[in-house]
Length: 201
Image (tube, rainbow, N blue to C red; front, side, top):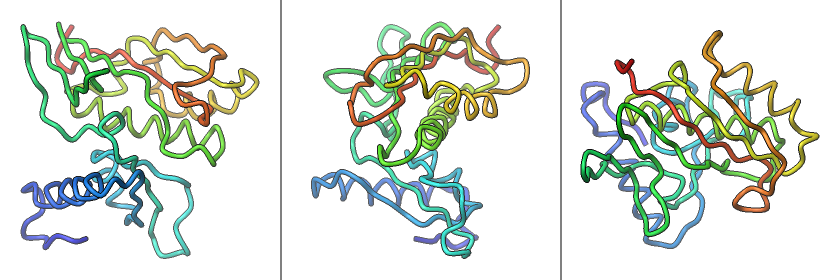
């Protein structure tokens, strides 16, 4: 898909993308993928996509990205406020984001793919966290706490190498990392986050 530069920044692209994902969901699809221009990766990440590798696709300045077509892993819906609590993408089981008292809570996030390395699964999750925090008025520089579940604790050094490169210097949260089977057993990593909203103290 493409949007005429004259209409950039007006929500046209987001509307098209959300419409395509809604159509895929109505067709009972489980996974969407795209070959994104490198410059467009943040746009697709904000729509719930994550990269599946760090290399350009066939040398054409394209990055393969995937998106699980379910409302557990995608944050496209407007928040609902009840008693001052904002809940995003709420189902009968959970809300993907809950914001209250200047704090943002992200439930456990899984990667899009299980057939990639622990490092790549971690990158996918952190890209989702970046997009969700932005949506809720926060960022990774405002992290308060994190919970990491690893299927095999021996993979902690591989996960940590990606985590430490992602966390801003001096902004590391209180964190726990334990060995436990993630919510979907085919995955190796799951991460939950609590952060302060921008402008709060």
